[in-house]
Length: 485
Image (cartoon, rainbow, N blue to C red):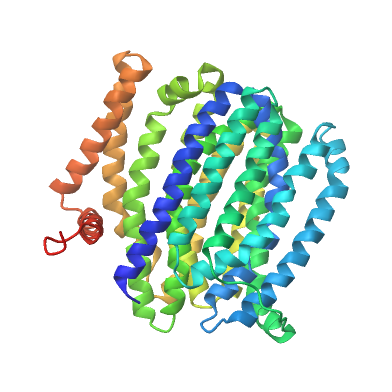
């Protein structure tokens, strides 16, 4: 695999996610100012159910297409038709169970919201195999136009409807429009089209690998969203809104970086699956590089949380600061999860992947059932604790598969962690100067960057030099040479 091609695809994926997340970030600020917290609580609750259904569309078979070395048009077409039937069935389930869900939460207004928002399931079915085709052939530039187009159009729709006083429907139609426009653009930019063929034999082969990943993803999604379901039932809509808003800001960053790594890393590792030394080297590089980027961002955001929320969302959202900090520390270690799990999937060990998910979720569910009685804050703390335990579990198989133990991984991350902690402590202390929110942030952000970059130069962090060389090489490639000018 050409390193330059890998890096180029990662950068395109990063730009795609970065552009989309930047627009989403701005839009979320505007909508949070226009809409009441309880509106966000309502949409967060509904989104849980559609997210669970999305797992059946987005997980398992799509990954199997990417992992299979010689997947062709017959494989892709077979999965496409199967997915479309699945999407229609899932929408029917959501349509007819919407009144039951509304009754359970004693919120009759949920019924029409669920039925409209669930249209994204059908739209996703049209897009899913196109996404797998792009990932398989490392055409991530296609995602850039699809994602950014959907995000920008849906942003305009959401803001307009919120300004006109449509409340929760502003968020509903923003989500539907985002999925629809992104799908349309992807179909125009990707040449692949389903053929008039369906192979039960191919389906059986792909399903034998994919069902374990599907079940793993379903367990993971249910586990991640169970806190939302419990908070929505046991506590108020405002509590749920603050919890989810606290997760949203760090999630914007982690989705951008981690999803970019995840999307590019799996197909690349799958192509190198026969060379364990190569897979180990790429996994190690992924952990070191992504941690170097993710750790300071999460630490800095956690330390700037209070003035940032007060300035951007107003004081009515300050209760979400605690949750934001907890999620920042939780997400900071996501790169180690992503790299380890992708290595396991790339080696074809979906069975092992499923076992890991069952173990982790059993521990996590126990923590949820205990913490739910002590308040929403303790439910958030339990997530942080179980995430730290999960990274040890995820890394354990690679001690044997790749000869890359958890202690080795910690040593690779340690310089970034220590430097981020020093930076975070300095940034947090700025708040004690008693300045207003704008001045506090204007000091905190440059100070954090200066300490982290300066420390990287002084201590000659290998990840810093690696990233710097990639960036310089990327821009040199884009700039015309003197002979061309």
